[in-house]
Length: 205
Image (cartoon, rainbow, N blue to C red; front, side):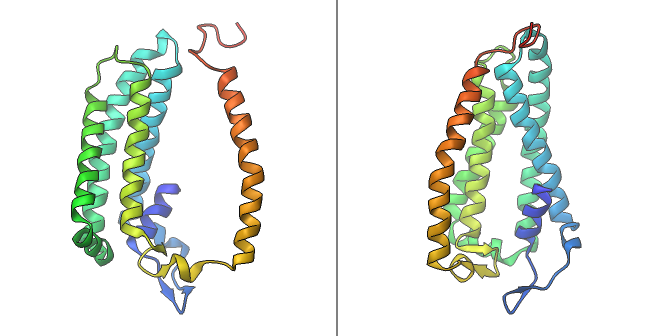
């Protein structure tokens, strides 16, 4: 669903007089479907990287094989989605004209990270596949931000036009300032408890 929504946004949302004028079925167009499948393989890359980092010996071979397949498929599908988006969305073409060098650098970084990930030997450093997978997402989202900003509804409504009042934003910021440290604290505690490799017999063994 995340991929469908992202693809639907990049393909373009029907807006008239600052109101949504499309249909919920708009996400079932070619670009959203390609984006949905692409993101599935992207999450498979992250999952394979996490397995490589945390799993015991019995899962290492499976994690390495899954990473090679998922990384290759993710890179190919991401490239197809980008080319198709440029073909059908004039707003993306204009952004490529404006930010061609920066976007080309991001494409190069994505290709290098994906190629490295697909070619990694099975006995590589355990954390490297997961870090490379994260870098793929960082590079991909950086490109999306560069293409879309400052639009909040791509190519239709700007961030400034859609912004709520200052009072509402201050209220949300206060809430985030209170909640974010708590979330970070319990997440850090959970990762600390389950640090290291998963034991052969599980955590209860």
